[in-house]
Image (cartoon, rainbow, N blue to C red; front, side, top):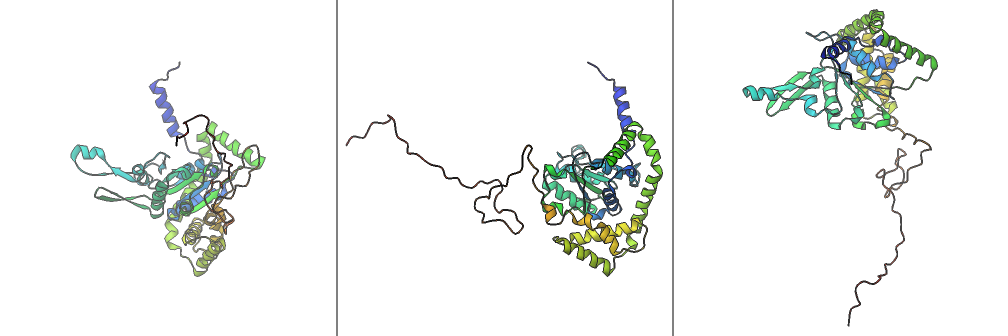
Length: 364
């Protein structure tokens, strides 16, 4: 059995803490993901980014890289990167009473939650589709408003909570409910690299970073500084940009063509289009900006985008599900009505039970 000293463990932790983050500008083959994250960073009011895709497609790497690109808040050395665990409670997310203060001096104070700690940075939720709906709903409310109000036992406090919400999910593990899916501002669906040249470039970049992280960070320092400055300048220039009637009309046309519900898609498209124009240093928002961001805002809101086919079972083809009992046929969207998983009644033959022995016959 080998024992490690406390000094060695502490040294390993310090080394891991000082290890640079994979540069945002070094990401390969993910231009839509980079655009969506940058737009959400410029205007967090867009409502965050939902990233779906299989394992190993740089979802968490991109989120961490974005946090390293953001300007640090006052009195901080870097923008925070806060991870919301799947086992988190509502109190951990939104805040709760500070029990130590109550026991010490009898005063009621609120302890801020994770949404407050993430102010000015990135709040990352891995496997957001596995979170309880109540947590997701509260999280999306804060992400869209930038202000969180905590009310507990007669105390009410407001905390600034302006952060970039990044949620990731693997569609094979389940989908978000449409009501929650619509609350995310932008979405990006990733896929595995299908070309050998691209896979080679991705693997080479990762191996190079693992062997010399500081060297890779220095090699991309200039591009990182340019992106960080562009984000800061775009944030400052948002208020000077307005939407013309032609831009508003173009957003409405895109939303109607996609058949989305409500007005959230129009609002997200307009805010994203403005953020894109500010990032590119232009003085006005155009219809082309709306077209450039439309798919990011509409992909997860389309009716067909809410349904995905069930994965094929291993070792065979997927059989059609039986029509549930009580349904009269498929619905207008082509899906059967009734409860999924319910089987129709199956008639079974019965046989009369003949007693063998048992109680004696009654006497007259």
